[in-house]
Length: 501
Image 1 (cartoon, rainbow, N blue to C red):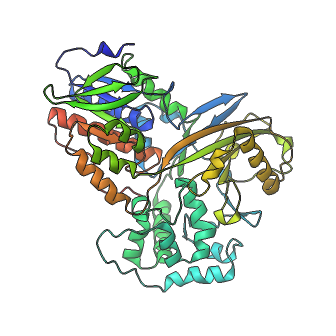
Image 2: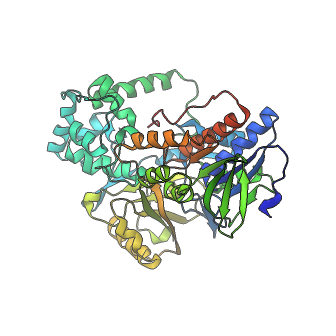
Image 3: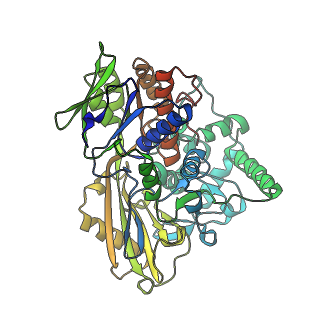
């Protein structure tokens, strides 16, 4: 369909560039608000690829549901869950299987269960930590020192700190290497030495400020949570992780169906953005040489992609966007028969500390985590490679990646037989890295964006890397554009508030 389908009526013309979850959430919010306010808009969503969804990509093959990207989102952050409900997907939402809610950490070639109640880097229960073999006795004693250590002296409000510095200071080097790095690395694929704690998990900094001891804070919060749970008639329906019955593509498909037929344009790459001052409109230059004008634009892209597009518009803005770095990751799905495994798998999977010197970041037992991921008498494993600490792994070819994963699974799970099939999916430069000082960098970007009120930036580089965060910020950007055009009072949270942990 031709992009010239934009009419010359005074109805505002809004363009979303990027069809990942951020762009789709922004487009959906514009349509929702347009209907609620009874103020029509002309919407266009431009996607350079041949499909929507970005890193969200589900493939069905021989009865298996294969996730090439994220397989779920967390329920603690409400924005993705609320979106699913508004889309009529609530009946299709599923939680993790309750009978196998545990995971493992690799230590010296063996899979050891994560102690009950351990949350990312600190315990909510003491006895499981005392009895675990993940930490040595000197390591456990060093962790216990957190109960006596004073608070950090803050030299300036909002002072940032790396994850590694924080964990090393409060809990010791072993807690960092054996637990915090692999657990947090599974979320951010980041180097803990440069990962901003204030931008990613400010909750832990707040715990220290309020309770002094991180362990005391976790124990008190656990007691409060248990009290609330025991007083509640009905517990949480889904648990922490939520997915859809046939995979995460269900969310993308539901958002796509909400788009008017004339709004979606695939294989449509935007090269640059200019401001027509006299016409008070944006001019988007497309790869095919054509142009499209718009009253408002949201760039829902990786920061470096947005930087290329706004270079000629605002070189300072482009320069700050390029300071946000990215890591590349790959997922390797392997399908097996039950008989191919020497023993049943129990749990959701395992993470691999960098200190183990393996090419694998983690492995999910997909068939144990969510129902319906593998046909009967079959097993589905999903391995992860790459990230900020192992960028060289991303350079391997598909067959070499599969061989590396198989070698690790043979050593760790004693799986010697070849899989029924394997599927590799790559995500080059897809995971934004929130380095120390990230919030200051974002504040600088926000200040420059304010000079272009009918332009917004969305994506995983700004307010969080998870699906709920991307939904939240995509919707916020859409609301800002509508508020600006229709002179509506702002009602959404702004990026100036640090993202929740």
